[in-house]
Image (cartoon, rainbow over all chains, first blue to last red; front, side, top):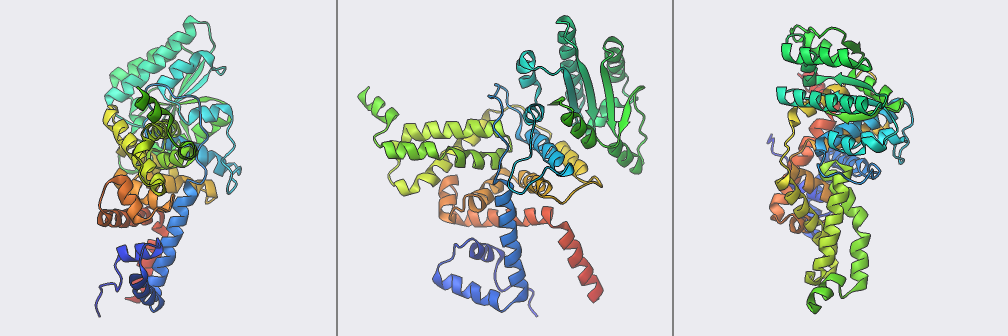
Length: 244
Length: 186
């Protein structure tokens, strides 16, 4: 009637990892033998080990040489999951092959502002997708600083540029009509640079509405099916991806 | 500076070659820890350089892998200590989770890889390191303990917590199914 498992989770893990010596191994093996639930647990643990191993069998290709300021790992993860999602959606995924990446997608893997700034001169593309997904006034306004810098630089050098800011999750606050200061900056950017567009994630909007929040966006904001879709499409079209 | 030169160039060319040949292994492990390929390259490079400089201190060549991974873990720790730009992890996780739940979510391999990586990335670093050392590099608990400078008991408990969290993240369907079964029994 006891709910205590016969073998602790740690011991079962050690069994699966091949870390038990003769006597311990024998006693766990015997318990597993006689217990369907334990057998299932062992299978699950093995499957999990296999999944983890498989997830890192192929790691993203080495990109350009690193710039000094590092892109935080979490952002890179998001970027790489996006690229993996590209491969998945469009059926390029193959079991043991990394997804096919063109130069711009590879750039996206480590696209942060600092590297973009240092690479901007050597990049041929003039199409830049800025992805904003975290909130906070400071983050949003520094993202706009970067956008303005880039646009000014392009204008000063007579370089054609198309720039799209796509916002999702908490980052959708960027386009909130209620924030007068941000809205004024966005309006000014659009006035001065016709090649700029703002795109909001349709799913984030839906989620916010479902949670009972009013969603009002600054004038001229387009709504995409989802930010992920938008990013994927732009990547496929060779845009440079920057995570703001 | 004869001593310095000897240390720099190493006494044992085979050991040097082996250290240099460990770069891919180190890079993969660093990537599993930080999920940033460029940073992983940097960390692996730093670990190889430190390994080459300090290989005279390695008494038992059989421990080379654990020793190098220990250096790698130290390099990551130093990097994190230096890094001043903290990231709002919660916001990003939310955005990953939100993006992952699109109706088009496909079950193909690339998607699974992304999900597993995302789940691994969601673990606290200490757990992430243990589970990747044991599962990717198939290190023994003793080696993992040595590489991370923690007792074996801690390796086991962190591993246990890490796997529980990974399963929670990766097997929601299985959990639902179990819940259904329990309810239907009642």
